[in-house]
Image (cartoon, rainbow, N blue to C red; front, side, top):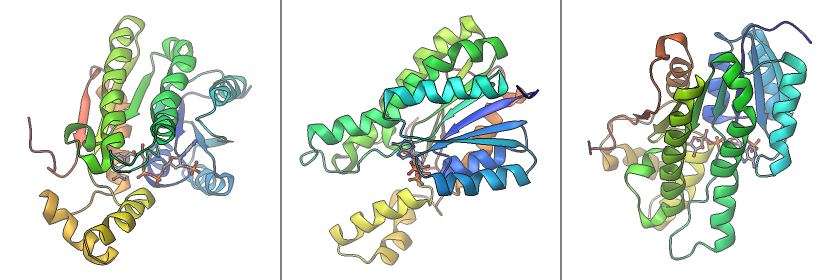
Length: 258
Ligand SMILES: NC(=O)c1ccc[n+]([C@@H]2O[C@H](COP(=O)([O-])OP(=O)(O)OC[C@H]3O[C@@H](n4cnc5c(N)ncnc54)[C@H](OP(=O)(O)O)[C@@H]3O)[C@@H](O)[C@H]2O)c1
């Protein structure tokens, strides 16, 4: 086993916010563990993490499968012997109208973003306890403004905020810090896919929809994956050690409620 000072696991590291977070954490951790399904994209992230100065290993697997959790945590412990930070970012909750969404689609939405993150956190808990580590769960601003067009996204994100709070309560006793982050509209592959569906339903081209959206939701621009990555890196840094049980929003001012 190589001597490694600090190890972060990032799920959803093949693209979007997860990839940006993995690249950002490469500046702060000696090893970054990259988890998602697409091996080629993970290899790309891995090469970029290594050029930023950290070790990288990849696990190309489906986090909806219960056995994936063991594969990741056991694999990381075999290789590095420790886990200091776990960033549960992978998510692909279907954005389907409440009255059209099937039970199977609801279950699939929960299977990755909620249960995958829950299982991985429980499996990594002892190692995180040993390192006084940190966990961040990815939620989303839909949790604070549910709409029928994306009811599952809102419900899963709200559930994640509650789950993170429950882990944080135990974390106070066990020396593990747990927070959740709720981004607003960040321009990624997932957001682009949202507009490809949303635009025709509003008689707009995708370009028009993207142009109009910020004003419609009361923001000046879309967020960048790197901005969320900076927040993630702060939450798992020594500077944020007293911050736990927080549901942090970063949304350009989209959510107007207190
Ligand atoms: N973009 C936004 O505006 C926004 C706003 C609020 C919250 N969020 C949340 O932020 C997270 C990242 O979103 P993003 O916009 O960066 O999306 P994205 O570009 O679509 O990235 C999603 C990531 O999840 C991974 N993933 C999907 N299904 C998986 C599975 N079954 N097993 C393992 N990994 C899987 C994907 O990799 P593979 O396809 O390679 O598996 C990818 O790395 C999500 O949880 C999303 O809900 C995003």
